[in-house]
Length: 377
Image 1 (cartoon, rainbow, N blue to C red):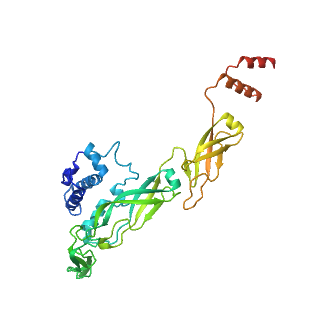
Image 2: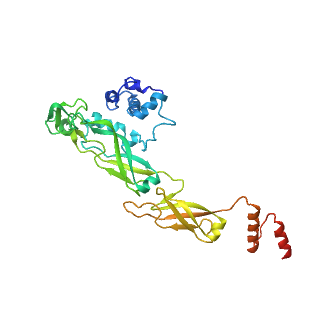
Image 3: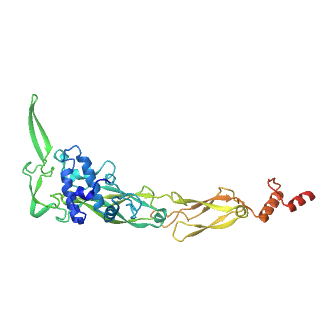
């Protein structure tokens, strides 16, 4: 990272979290592409977001101060949740430009009515198969427009109030008449001063400039039920983007992603695993122990006599937990018959005797006793 993040925000390395947040708000208002028409405004705005993302997080900031980067070993991402890039945080096609367009009242605000209700937001959460089997509580960290604490989300400063918009006289729209050769044409546009609400704030909150919300990092603990599927979503009401002037907040949609497992493969509510048995166990039958998906669980798999390579043995009710139920699916053990690569002298003699008894031909050096037996018979 060639850019100095402290220099980019205009703060010192000893700056407090509050100083960093305040500097970010100020710079964001200056550099947002909706208000700054410089050719490099968008690129500079992205760099600003990156700087704030690092310096507003204590773990990232500590690593940045030490190594000058947050990449590589020991970098961000091991805190028990999946970090979601700001451009992905608000769902497909919605990024930081959209967030700050609403927040700062960008160029589009004069043409369309301002959305008062908060948008839904989405994050991804990666979990292990063991966590899914029993259910788990996880903390997620995400950035959103949260209610301004200074004005309690109302947008009104001390002694302030909502008044009728002077520009549109409370109608929320401005009517204009244009003379053409076909006659007078009347058009209506959303009032740019009140955003179509018909109200403006007299003495707005100085912290949020009358929006009633500010960008903030949220820490939220959620409970993931057992048996949930990969790609399934949890909807957390009112934890999404805060609304303007105390309007309803959107929801936070958490998409579950399950990591691959080194021993189990999930198939709905069932689990598949592979077990190894010797040629003797496959021929004679055996009971082997397999470590299950539940904590400290050992499962007995009964290998039937004459079991063939790649045969499947089913163990009922030892698979995956079923979503919102107390029951479990089944475990399917796929058998691999392992042939020994090296044999002792005695083992070789026994196998040769067995092969002879079966009337099977085999290659390899015979023992003296076997050659004598062959000569006598």
